[in-house]
Length: 225
Image (tube, rainbow, N blue to C red; front, side):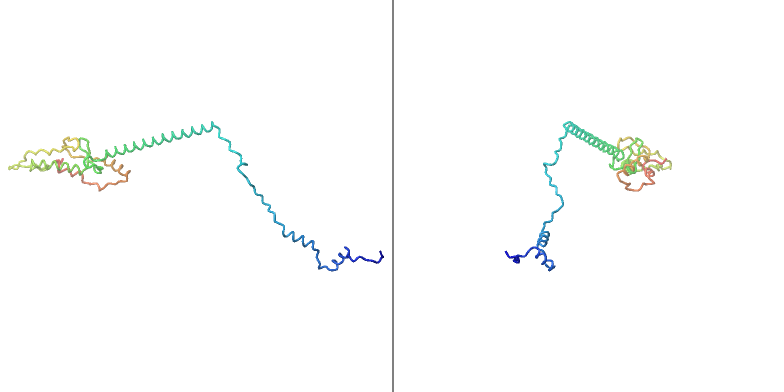
């Protein structure tokens, strides 16, 4: 082959020279690499744990002795609760009974209401003032049917101006035990205060003002002393 014969195929050296002479030319390989880099999927660094029931540790069964002890404690508490409930019912029953007994002590046997103004008789029984007045007034009217001129504080005189024998008193008696009453009733201050204490606990108040002249109402039934 002649020495001056050259191959028409460009050599690698000529190609590199051409790239150096034309700096605008880019190597296709780096472009393809960058394109692949842009399309590379993003890998998340978050770790997701997936658990299953099989991975959980089983709860150990409660020992039989501990279960029996717990059940016994529950039964004991139930018995204690039943005992306390029964005692509370008994206490409430006693309270109701005591309240009823106290109510009976302050209730008038005639009008069946609280004795706001009680008066006591010689026999020891107490009644409301108004009820005693009505009771004695009925006896006085019957007595005057027999003795029309009866006047407890003004005995009659005869034609000579001499006082006649005093007429007998009306047959006043206790409305409960029927024992004869010859003297004026006396206001029962102890019972009066007791009534107000009980009524105050129940939120009640006296329906009317006390009568300051209550002691004088008996003058028309009994002689002045």
